[in-house]
Amino acid sequence: MPVFFFSLRFLFFSAIIPLLASIFLYRFDTFDPAPLPSDALVYSTDSIPPLINDRFLTGAEFIGAGLLNSPEDIAYHRDSGLIYTGCVDGWVKRVKAFESANDSVVEDWVNTGGRPLGIAFGLHGEVIVADAYKGLLNISDDGKKTELLTDEAEGVKFKLTDAVAVRDNGILYFTDASYKYNLHHFAFDIWEGKPHGRLMSFDPITRTTRVLLRDRYFSNGVSMSPDQTHLVFCETPLRRCSKYYINEERVEVFIQSLPGYPDNIRYDGDGHYWIAMPSGVTTLWKLSFRYPFIRKLQALAAKYGFDTMIMENAGVLQVDLDGKPIALYHDPKHSHVTSGVKIGKYLYCGSLLDSHIFRLDLLKYPAQNRL
Ligand SMILES: *[C@@H]1O[C@H](CO)[C@@H](O)[C@H](O)[C@H]1NC(C)=O
Ligand SMILES: *[C@@H]1O[C@H](CO)[C@@H](O)[C@H](O)[C@H]1NC(C)=O
Image (cartoon, rainbow, N blue to C red; front, top):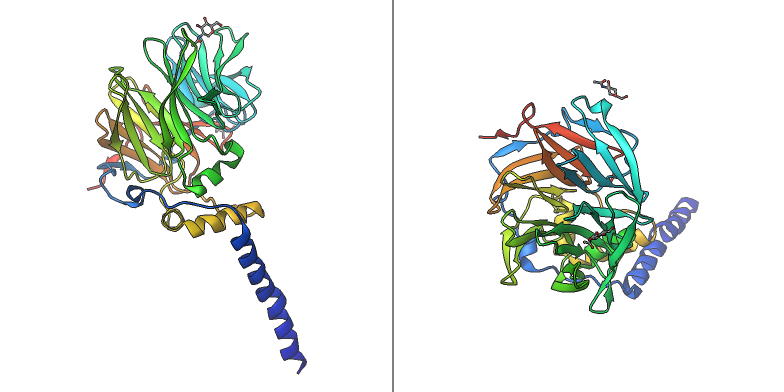
């Protein structure tokens, strides 16, 4: 029977061969994801604030449209009123925003030759950049000199220098998200589920780099508390931000069980931190964090060109100094929001996908009580 014959062959080539091949690939691939700590698998509504704007793209305005290629972090320089942001093409750009978003002016300031992520201001007008590929950089205030401050600690090179904060005594605090995977392969770090991240300090006087915390899970954004006693830093896959008390060298949970995966955290000078989350929690993320074999399948798929790292429902969470959630701005239609900072009445957001910064007028489009 030709039809039967055909379908058997068809079955063989379309299903059995690929199945055997996948089992073979799966068994012999050396990628070995680990279970995550159990508190990373807890989902709770404690971190969801009473005030929510769940369509925060509505009313958002684009700043520097077409001129900012994946602006990841945003740092606001109060004295000059300029916004500094790092782009995927290596440019640190300076943006002057006006009342009319379309009047904004973008200046290509300094190209690091790497991928500038976190940005902070030093005590002498210099700009400190956490460059994913280069390490911690010091750019002079006139933009003419770029100096590498550090790119390794305890003999281990940084692979994904991520964010930086400055204390009022000049010491720099920064994160390396992973010593194993670079930015291009960051998804593998998340899928592997092992702690390759470090929180460190750099003293510009002694030029020493100190590891403050090791074995952190993709240590990402970091911010200095306004009283200068501690840092708050985010661990993306754990959906958690922690405090690190500088003098006591002590760690404490700041906020956990976040509704998404935290990236940069920014203090607004006015009693609140803003935590950006490039993706909200999805069913796939939940399953893959629970079951390492799913992460192994995702990593295998990625090696063969299939991207399953799907991000959706990005948001920015406003919390107070004790980590109590105040307001959440999110949008199911948006993803990859990596930073949020309040400047005046606006929330400015950076992103890994867009070619602009977007901003939302918080007076016109406030988060509202959902009860
Ligand atoms: C700003 O520019 C965009 C794109 O060019 C345009 O669609 C929009 O109408 C402009 N807005 C204003 C207020 O001029
Ligand atoms: C950065 O470099 C400038 C000189 O361009 C220097 O004055 C400043 O102290 C340096 N900052 C740090 C944190 O090393």
